[in-house]
Amino acid sequence: LGLTTWSPLAYGVLTGKYSTGTPEGSRMESPLFKAISPDFAERVAQADKLKPVAEELGISLAELALAWCMSNENVSTVLIGAKTVPQLEQNLKALGAVELITSDVKAKIDALVPFVPQLPKPDVIAMVRAKHL
Image 1 (cartoon, rainbow, N blue to C red):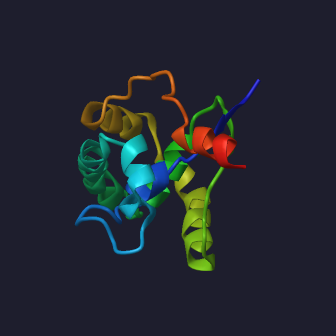
Image 2: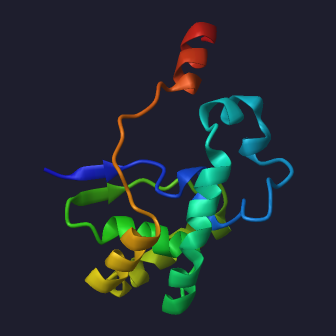
């Protein structure tokens, strides 16, 4: 039995693009996304804690996040959501970074950003889509 991860880059939060604010034209400018992610600033702050780990390994934050997912023996599929060819190329670099995610690196990540599994929140987008389609 395998696990498929969805949105392993957390809507771009784990790429670092929101570290200095919300870029113009990004999905997080939308009121709908703001409604489904009220803890957005906290998520960005947690992601920023991981930057030194990525830098120490010589990889990007996105590569770290994707490689961390792929390094989990229970994960069989990591779904990416690249919108552009450069994003796809960046995501594919994570394949070469999986071997860098040792038990020591995982322990460091766990110490910086403790992961506590939670039940998913209602999917507001799906509810809106169901009402209007």
